[in-house]
Amino acid sequence: MEKISRTKIVDLLKREDFGTMVNVKGWVRTRRGSKQVNFIALNDGSTINNVQVVVDLSNFDEEMLKLITTGACISVNGLMVESVGSGQKVELQAKEIEVLGACDNTYPLQKKGHSLEFLREIAHLRPRTNTFGAVFRIRHNMAMAIHQFFHQRGFVYFHTPIITASDCEGAGQMFQVTTKNLYDLKKDENGAIIYDDDFFGKQASLTVSGQLEGELAATALGAIYTFGPTFRAENSNTPRHLAEFWMVEPEVAFNDIIDNMDLAEDFIKFCVQWALDNCMDDIKFLNDMFDKELIERLQSVVKEDFIRLPYTEGIQILEKAVLDGHKFEFPIYWGVDLASEHERYLVENHFKRPVILTDYPKEIKAFYMKQNEDGKTVRAMDVLFPKIGEIIGGSEREADYDKLATRIQEMDIPMKDMWWYLDTRRFGTCPHSGFGLGFERLLLFVTGMANIRDVIPFPRTPRNAEF
Ligand code: 4AD
Ligand code: MG
View 1 (spheres, helix red, strand yellow):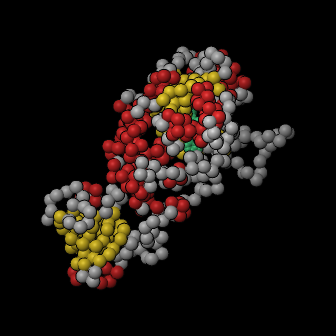
View 2: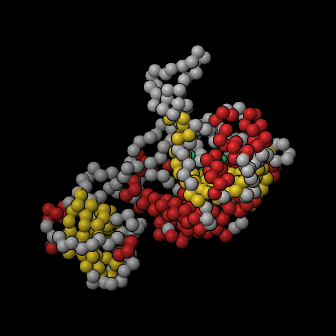
View 3: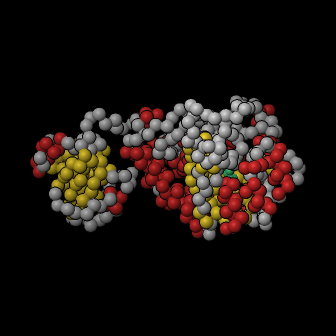
């Protein structure tokens, strides 16, 4: 076969220099036609769109043609011609075909229309489907949007550790990291495990958040963000929770909670606009396949101001809804940690746009949040989104050494693990704020997918770590 340098299908479909010989390589989606002419729909992952390859069967070896089945990988040298019937401007008239990898009929993606549940069981092959090709291209674009947003604003991308000895959220949801022999653990006279001879010489875990180290960086570099994997051993089998997920955590010196809300709102709008500007082919596909209101929802989030509302007023609205006959599964009262159904009621039924809820009861929030003067609430902010519920959690941080140390003691957090964090408040403390955005929750919103397992390539959830 003549060596011609490869053209990606995404580029080919934009070209108009008909009559040129080009090479494309990709995987066969479908093959159909008559005894004389066949039409191959070829996809190489560079776009949701296939290129149609027209094959005049009399020009090719019969044995080779037999190998061109759904899923097979082929390389085609062909003439670019204007297309009338393929749905694209361009198609290829095949001159030479090489089968790079045959694919027998045990290939599970023979026909279209597999359920998302089935595709999760073949997560190693699902990137070959239209749906997951679209989702993972959007995922990439959102990662680029995040770096673009913060880089443009002078934030430093700061890498926080994945292995840590502190529980940032204090929720006891950490996966342990050890090299100890679990069948032969040394214990002290009280039955507590001795970690002195473990790899790190102390109990270590996978991080639930990079925030604490992010704060160290913000109080030196001014404005930073982290973007990396985080881990939570929460046994919640919901469409919104993963045991391993990616989090984006900006942290900014001198920002108060209002600045923090402004940043969060600008940030999400920037990312959604980026998706509309850069991923429209994929979004259109997902809109048509799964969620007819997706594009509309994305456009309206970019346009509208988010509602900003204290938790206490949110509770009043929810209590009134109950009085008016709305049924929630979980009870509603001041002090409750809102369930997703409550958050979605505020966003979808009451305000019909994103809501930033602030000033939560301190009992349901982490130790590091700035305490309000009422002695009951903290300067927390959660951003609540349609279809998702909480997409961002953040706060202004407690900058006062004594207040912070007292709260750490009240919450029984071991002081000896926190000395380095408290040093930020001892040495030139400053007001500062930050938040964490769940990357997969953002992707749920942008793709319109309903289950978080379908926006990360290889989901880790309770009882599932396949692939
Ligand atoms: O609200 P969270 O727990 O906040 C923090 O971790 C703070 N340290 C962030 C900060 O202020 N720097 O988590 C932040 C976000 C949530 O709003 C949610 O979007 C996402 O992380 N998240 C999860 N996403 C998927 N699966 C899970 N199990 C998640 N837990 C939290
Ligand atoms: Mg939260």
